[in-house]
Length: 362
Image (cartoon, rainbow, N blue to C red; front, side):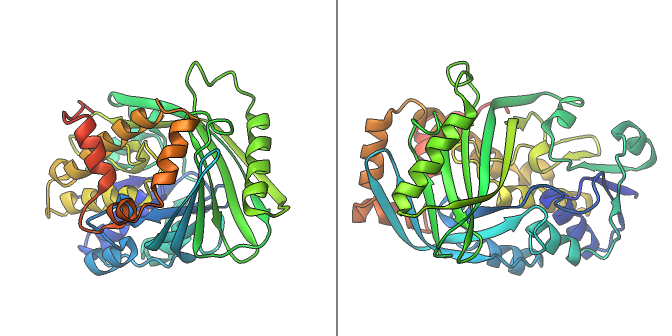
């Protein structure tokens, strides 16, 4: 058995680590110079979207021997709509670093891998598939998947963000649901430390949103963030993405080619999360290769989660700012807060399943 992984991101590295733990050798190819060679930013893993898994970091460590150290835990989530503020308190999840940050999840995973990653190797799938018995496609680019099979594109997204300086509580995350600044999308602020944070504005590219000026929306987003948090933040660096594909591959594997991470469709459409799901696809693919499970069956619950999340997004997109105000205000209701944070149920999946009970093809 000769195994190749194309891509040293979250999914590819988790796959390689799991294969090593099961005594299998693997070659990892990465076209860039380091794991996580992209702009630095903070991302989050929220327990409320992962229930019944209550603590993703603990689960990955105790179940699969993959050890991650977040930059902070989230004790409070503040949700802002145009005119309302809703607050959730409790053990809500974790904030972690991504990209070129020395403590990024990519860097942490690469350090746990015994195999040397072959950097600066922009390998061709056609050439690799001739040489290796098993190939794991983990490039993070759905366009690579589309060369091999259908990929259902739910939407493409525009990201505009920055690293900002100010005063922050590392245990607090902030989310903005205001269609004046992010049409049919959202903005979020996640602290890196007491003095730095990531602020990101993201919205889908639909015919009725394509005409918006990205920079003007960003200016409104930044001003709203400063107003809501009552600070004059300083921007230290900027980043921007367009045409970022959110979707799902039709098949989890074709022959001995496995699709993981974004090549599989691990980003949940409702809120753009997906780190935990991405890592699980890598782990599940490795378990199949090692003869410890069936990849299609192992990812079935992730496919259903994608379906439920997409249904939830389609519902949220139909709301206007007045309706978003009502939803945000309802979060302050004690019963609603208990439903959202209850580790024995996943409210978001329940809503998605109720609204659209029949699974989509992809």
